[in-house]
Image (cartoon, rainbow, N blue to C red):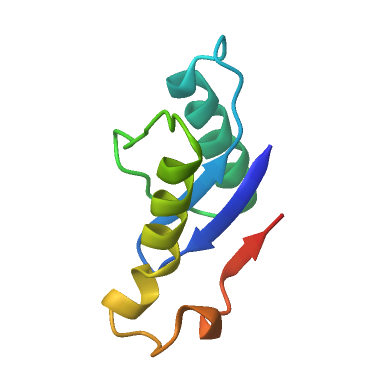
Amino acid sequence: MPLLLLAMPDHVHMLARIPREEDIGKLIGRFKRIVSHELPTAWQSDAFDHRIRGHDQHLAKRAYILLNPVRAKLVERSEDWPFQKSW
């Protein structure tokens, strides 16, 4: 279940709740196939994933993701970035 989705001009960040028994690599592959079916997309051959263990790690990763457009100098404040969705 997605908790946060943020699209940058050249990459996507997703913070999602994934059961431990789920293979993250296969899940990311399915996600890429679904998106590519709808939009022409050139994906990297790999993905960068993390298992977050604990509330502090969750908050740190969320803050890192939300600050991506600010660090890229696309907006001054993360809340001004229109290509994000939180659940």
